[in-house]
Length: 112
Image (cartoon, rainbow, N blue to C red):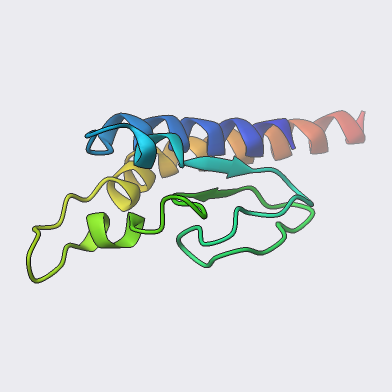
């Protein structure tokens, strides 16, 4: 569980660094939802839902910031300023490696 949450925290930190900043509301809306907790309403991707027992969810947006997807993908009047998915792709491999290493360690300790 700690490896899962740490990986999600690192992904969120990278996304915060990549987020375009005017007043910081979008950047500050990026959150990590820990296992068995609920995501903020109106968050992207997916809106409000409860994270599974072995799941950490990184979201952008909340009830005050409902435009994260418009910034990410752009509109007909504003170009895309991707931050969410590039941040995820940059940190995904590192997070998966940490989780796999943690699982392997737990299995080895169980065998002893």
